[in-house]
Length: 235
Image (cartoon, rainbow, N blue to C red; front, top):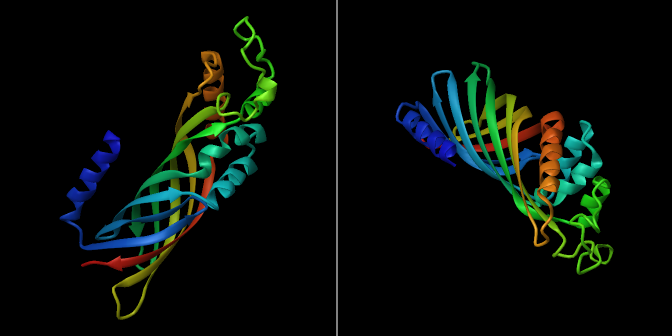
């Protein structure tokens, strides 16, 4: 959060020197619905945007990650977390005179705490002796409570992506409006995961989950997107 606040301060510091200021609405498919602001100065621009990851993008983005080689069992473990989340993006672009621009960006995705049924976890970690893992019987039969909220495991994930983009801007004649399209491609450079449950699962399970999910993101979270923005110039 402190880093996000710092980026905001830098953004507004540049604002006083910007030659042109804009706001926009749009979408990054298959990542988010988004809104943000643009500051332009000479041949450069800084772009700051917030967005929401929700349906139908949740299934698409997971299919993309799985398509790069991620284990389908891991995808099933994190699937519920992708039902909704928030995205923060900062881009630094260089503009050519023909409307084409290129850039670098950082994108931070925070995915909500969602419940994963026990049977999905158990199928991926058969080495755990689930019924006797604490060397004593449980007061209930796990097999009868798959999907029960008591045995579900809550997962919250945060991902940091770094990427490249190429875009094109089209100014609508005799107006303050502009259309922008972008092609982007990012790679995961950091992730963190948090777990909780009403059932006191051993810390070893959480450690294994964190290692395997983080490794999956590092190896396979390559996220391409097609972006479309409707821009309003405010200066």
